[in-house]
Image 1 (cartoon, rainbow, N blue to C red):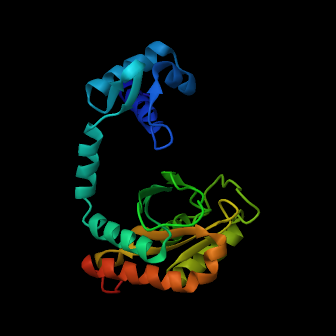
Image 2: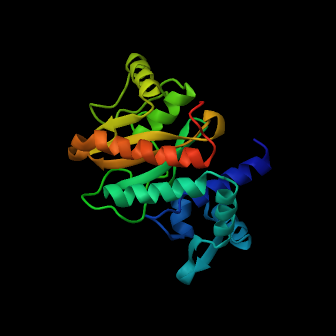
Amino acid sequence: MPRTHATVEAAVRVLELFDADRTEWTLSELAQHLNQPTSTVHEQLQTLSASGLLVRVGRGRYRLGWRLLKLSSALYGSLPWYAPAHDAMERLARGTHLLAFLCVLHGDQVLCVARSVQGRDGPPVAGELDFELPAHATASGKLLLALAGYPLPQPSQTFTDFTLGTSAAWDTETRSIRKQNHALSRDEWALGTSGLAVPLRGEGGAVLAALGLSLPTARMTASESLLRALHGAAAEVGWTLGFRGEG
């Protein structure tokens, strides 16, 4: 692997360790977690700090730097669908009192790029802080993979007894998703957590993202009304983006 490529990958691995659960790391903690020499990690931290992607705080700890806000603002600004989709997601959360989210497909990875910050009540659900979601065990993942025509991911981890694990079951599921234009998961990632998702489409019917809800399985008795709310919110976003049902 070329040195430049390896250097960039190493920097990305360091940045990905910072999340809502772990906002600070020390040099020794990072070196131990990455199983790399302290001198190597120190060089990476120096470079990332100099670029503003990390910042050193008290007692030799590091946090994400403010420069990342500029990059994230530029990213979201380059996506015409993001602002109306985000607004729809927040309205959906307030109207249902559930955790609403937006997910996108990146290669064969399903990434949760936004979650509602208000309106939700009730017990916690699985994956509230996860960025990458299991594609075959979540409603948004199954939806995006099915509409893209992807096969069952391999290897496909089994999380519960309800996780889809065979190609035959996957084919049946994806046909249903394409026909109904929505996906659901029930106890497939974690017992007690279920989900619903519908596609957000742009002009020409292109699938831009998944708009979904994560909820305690006990509340799936209201799935029909929740799906109506999801489809209605997605239709509003699609109309704003020029989708007229031709996709």
